[in-house]
Length: 520
Image (cartoon, rainbow, N blue to C red):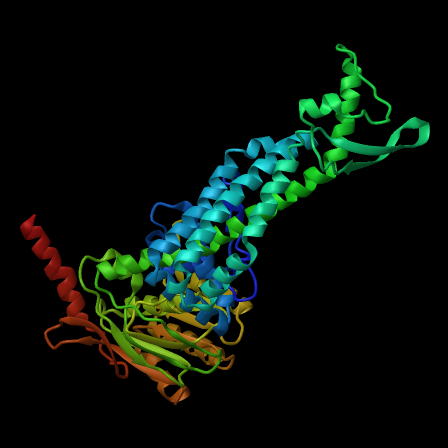
């Protein structure tokens, strides 16, 4: 049985399945992308993951893996998940019921886990039988949900899933399982054949089928005794008892292993089902929180990599929406055919927020989620890098500008075509002239490698100089500022201005300081 709710033709390979099956192990999740720490810090991904997970660590890990590994998904997978997610949002209660059933199977298995560590075939067979009874019971509940609610689901993922359940979990299937589990109790004893090998040692143990089981007492009294040799152990023959026990273990060894493998197969199904549904539960949790804040969401339109399509209406930084107690202003952009977007304007105008919103929307789109926008369309990227301004190195090992260049070098070493780079005030740790020239040379080189770039900067020389170098491939956006200095947090098409709004900074620093002193 396969869930196939994240991929059309295969199960997910998220390592979160290990945490579902072996929760007591201290299993450290590996990094999913080389620059995971930078992405998490610059895009504030922990805020997103916490909103998806709530207090559930398993949901957190699955959300993290799904979002970061989405950069490897193709357009078909993205659209496939979007359809499944729409079904989940329309049938939230039923989806949570299915998830709870998968958790129930795993939790009931956990309570019996220690017994499975036994090396005795009889113990393994008994515990495997008990687990198969548990899983069969949960499968019956799962089939009941499918029979009652399957008609309310429309996506290919869920219709295929429910069709699989109905086809495989038939009445004959359950009857066969119950019959075989009764037989594996061996209430009539174990019938085993063997051959004599070298030194009269028994070999080739074979478990034989006994169709009649243990006869009733009256049948035993009046039945004709079989013509066979019988050996009875003395009451205190411990060595003989051990020998017979060893024969029994060898006889049922293959059956015990087969039963354990069947139980493991069912457990894998429930673990995979739980893992795949956990991603959609995280999406539902996030959707509910965004709806509570009246934030618009949409299903983005992914297009082929390298097509240079990028447009949005009402795009918001989802993490800011989750943390801010007031309305977040959305922004529009039409960057189709552009390889470079330069964002300038006054401080506190929404530039960094917009940049973070671009990165979050890209990640959310590529893992099959909705995005915090009224509409969003972009070509998918194979890698996403961030190069944000960092605080001064506290250890004084290297200067700030040197650290920026080292991070840029690390990005260049792994950079591939159709990647997306987000720069935020990069190369500003030196003087204007030097920083602008270095930034301009780096951007020129990147544009030749089919990379899409968003660059927030205050360096007028750098931004203005690119107007001629990248003619036709660059879009300029500028943070709007009213004549009285009021910020609207809207980004509008506009070439960079030479002014840095020094008066605003003066008022912010000195007037604000005087005001604080006065009120203090």
